[in-house]
Amino acid sequence: MVERVLRYKIILTVLVGVFAIVVAGCERPEMPAVGAKGESALQVPVGIHLFPWYHVKDKIATNHMTLMSKGKLKDTNCLPCHQQPDKFCNKCHEYVGVEPVFAGKTYKDVLALEMPAPGIPPPPSHSPIETWKTTHDEAIISGRETIATCSGCHPAADQFCNKCHENAYIRKITY
Image 1 (cartoon, rainbow, N blue to C red):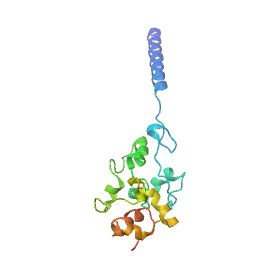
Image 2 (image 1 turned 180 degrees about the vertical axis):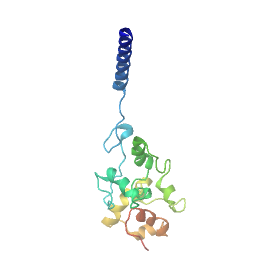
Image 3 (image 1 turned 120 degrees about the vertical axis):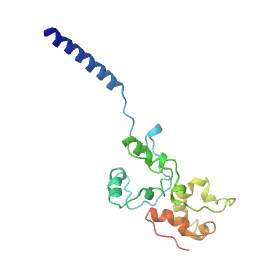
Image 4 (image 1 turned 90 degrees about the vertical axis):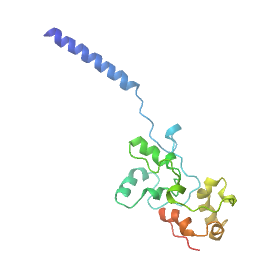
């Protein structure tokens, strides 16, 4: 009986030791965040000065699920600023193990934006082409561009401008 207890103690000690070595060798992945390095770095839009009412900078990560579950916020509300869900939203979704949003899609696909006819060169405010959203706030506010400028290529505000404006709870454009 003493030998059996001793054998169990030895086996238990070895198992605990192996478990401790395995756990010590495991490294928890870095939580996605602004300023994180490598795969955990969140790509934050640059040049945006107009924040929606629900976007309190350091609290959005903790309160966005409450807002979504109460129906006050939809996943499409994020797209006007976070145009590439795989580089922002889905990094946290993957980290916490929840279903990704709009995986592999862009805001243009999800919102079904009607783009100008092919061959129309973009204005200077659209260069590079994916930065127009981060520069158009400042261009309109400062007066460098007007809604009339936009209507030349985007003649129907409800098929382009307002798809983002409505999702970000920004006033509707009419022209």
